[in-house]
Amino acid sequence: MPLEFSWLMPLCTPDWAARPGQWIQLAQAVEYAGLDGLWIPGGALCADSLGVAAVLCAHTRSVQLSVSVPPEVMLPAALATTLQSLQSISGHRVRLHLPNSEHSAFGEWLNRDQRSERIGEYLEILQHLLASNTEGFDYQGRYFQLESAGVTRREIPAPSLLLDDTQSHTLVAAHARTCLLAPGHPLRLAQEIQRWRQIRPTLEFACTFGLILGESEDLAWETAATLLSVPQLPEEPLATLLRARHPLRRWEVHPNLLQREAGQPLILVGTPQQVATRLQELHGIGLNHLILEGGPSVSEVLRFGEQVLPLLFQQGLRKERLNHD
Image (cartoon, rainbow, N blue to C red; front, side, top):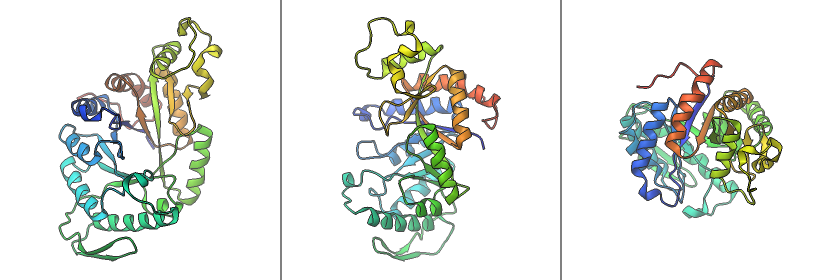
């Protein structure tokens, strides 16, 4: 199975309200560079993901739009209607991620078992309303009650669903096409993938990674030190340091993979060839979909498309040679 890439849209920064033009520019750069999709995050501190997705539909033609929508912010019947509209105007390019986080920020104080039961009802309703069915839908659950819902549905393909690995195994196995794994060492990711495959062999897997490219390995780590806060940097230029003495290497958990704190996404740091090699390894352990983030975003997206994707094509990890339109 080819390796897919989505680029994480920067919608959760403190100054997100001043960035709409930059979002469009970044989305178009992702499409031009040949990546597969945009990851549109959602949360209490983010711009409205559904609204952003609607805007980007008008400014892109082919990239997938993976939209993250906390299930606490919208009732399932309302979300189904919105998703159908997005599918229609985007040409069936929408994927849905329902994150399992920030419950209290949206006013939900259920315990873990209650949340699992509620999201189970939510998914049952959502997938029924997104299926091809012209009759009204009645539902009586503990958390949701519907009467004659979905009477205005259209014959539109339902978005594929991504769920976090923190959801119950039963829910992920029953409803999700893709499981979003928490960041971790490649060995831990491999173990998680094998564990999930015992539950559902056809499940696909995604994970988020940072990206810092350099013309040389030293330049990549120098750029990383510039972008990341590193305490007590030595006075000498970073490019003259030996590999073992580079301050950031203290957090290198795997070749070319940096993780400053547990739970944070790992960051790919290196030359295009080194990054392509690591991506091949990640694909080998079972990852199908990588969500990338980097900055400055547009230049890094274009660099990835020009310097890394052709190497992955040579390795057989891309469907076809990418052409810029």
